[in-house]
Length: 553
Image (cartoon, rainbow, N blue to C red; front, side, top):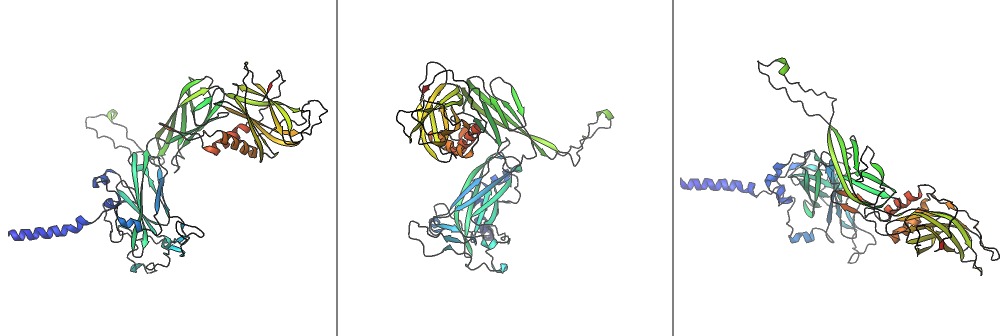
C-alpha cells in the first residue's frame, strides 16, 4: 500500500511539472513584480492578464546577460525608444509610442524590409548587399493561413490579417499594471490607454520587441519608462514681458505689464467640453482675479519679491451616479418621515471638478521701459570720406540709465546685416536719459538700423529706416534729409535683430519649478516672439523738443 501511495504521488508530481514549468507573461516582462500585483488594478480594455502562458518555443526568452543578444541583429544593435504624453489627468487617454532606431546606414523600406542606405559609410566598407533583412522573399508567408502556425502572438492568438499585415515584421508586447497588449507593427508602434481605472501615481510601462526569423521570432530590444496618472490638472505657465532681458530668471520690470499664459497639458482633448476658470493671486495685495481666459496681463508697480499663485478649476462633464434606492420604512412611520427618492433622467449630466495649481516667486526691479530716437543729424568732416559718412542719432529713454548701446545697420530690406557696434554708456550725474549715438555708413543710400539700450536686467529696442545723402564739405552741419521712419512690424527685420540679441544674450532656457513648470521659451523661438511683440506694439517714437545737449557715444 505504501508503494502504491508513493507511485500515485509521483504521478501527481509529474502531472504538475508542465504547469509549474510553463513561463508566464509576468515572468518574461517584469521579474520584479509578483503575481499579486495583477489583482491590485482594474481591467484595461483590450488588455489581458499577465498570468497567461508565454509560448517560449515561438518567442524565446533571453535574460539581460545572455550572449545571444550580440547576434540578434545584423550590423549592430537596435534601440527601442519609448515615449508617452504623460502626465495624464485621470479619465483621459494616455498614448505610448515605441520607435525603433536601427544601426547606422540601415533603414526600413516601404515593403517593411530593412535595407542599407545608399552612399552611407559605416565603420566598415559599404555592404555589397542591398538588404539587411529581405522579409518579402523569406519563405513561410504564403496565402494559406492554415499552414502557418507561427502567425501568432506569444499567447497563441493569431495575427490580425488587416491590409498590409505581411509588411509588419515586428511584434511588440506592451506590459503595465499586471496586463499586456500584443501588437504587430513595423518600425514604430503606438498604443493608447484610458486612465479612468488606472491607479493614481507613477506607473511603469515595459515593452519587448521581436523580429521575424523564419518560423520563429528573435528578441531585439527591451525598453521601459515611467508614466504618471494624476487627479490634478497638469498646468504650465509662460511669462513674457517687453524689455525683459532674461526670460528665464523670473525677474521682471516694474511698471510694465507681464503677460501670463496658462497651458493645460491635455493631448487627448479630455477637457474640451469642460468649463475652465483661472483664479490668480499675484501676491501684491491687488486681490483675487478670476477669469475664463487662459491669458492675463498684470503690472507690478512696486519693487520687491512676490508670490504668484494660480488655481485652475475644470468642471469635467460626465454621467451622474446611479440614484440610491429609498430606505425601507417601518409600518409606524408617517408620510412626513419618508426620504425623497433620487431620480436621474437620461439627459441629465453631472460634473466633477478637477483642480490644477501653479506657484512661482517673482522679483520686480527697475529697468529701461522705453527708447526713442528723436533726432538724426549729418556730421560734416573737414576731409570728405564718401565711404565713411557719419551721422548722429539723439536718443532718449524712460526708466533707469542704460549701461550699453548697440546698433545694427542693414540693407533697406533688413535682410543683410552690414555691421554691429556696441558701446558702453557713460552715466551722467543727473537722471536724464539723453545721449547721442554716432555711427558711420559706407555710402549714400537708405539703410535699416535698429538700436538697443540695455543694462543687467532690461533691453529696450527701437528701429528706423535711415536715408543718407552725399555730403558737401562746404555746407555746415545740418539736419539729415532722411526722415525717421518707423519700421513697425517688419518680419525680416525682427529676424535680424533677434539673431543679434540671441548671439549676445544666451540666458534663455527652460526653468523648472517644484510645483509647476514655467516655460519661458528656448533660444531663437523665444527671442523671435520677444522681438515680434516689441516691434508690433506700434510706433513708439516721439519728437519732443531737444532741451539738453547730449553727449556723443
